[in-house]
Length: 176
Image (cartoon, rainbow, N blue to C red; front, side, top):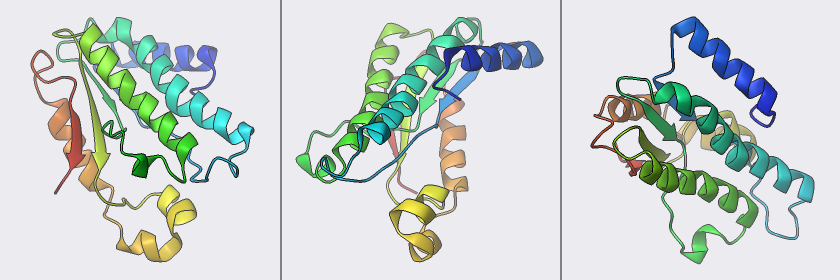
């Protein structure tokens, strides 16, 4: 559970021990609730920020010592480009803030570790067949119309094979 530092640190250390290090950190954990301000209970607000914001920061932080030793280290956050158009905030302010905080981690860490670790974001342009789409965003009909998750893994594969010294601080929207 990315909300708990001791559990996360143990998982990172076990992974590094088992695989002989860490080359890539993908921050995909996310909590979602697409409600307006009045309908967003604070327990859910806190959960979204604990997982999306704090979890991304903490996971990256715990992986950094290993990434700094890797040959081609990358951090990839599944988070949107920072677009301050009110359209993205209305109706789901709490969720948008939590996801944008993940994006701010991209900007900050890309600058902080420039030339040492590539830090980028990937975001789909259209819906992807996930549990969130089926359960939160539109049910079975929306799920059936959504694209297969492999499109995201293919895009991530391309990003994670780029040279970490020259490819960092980007927000890539899956267009294919």
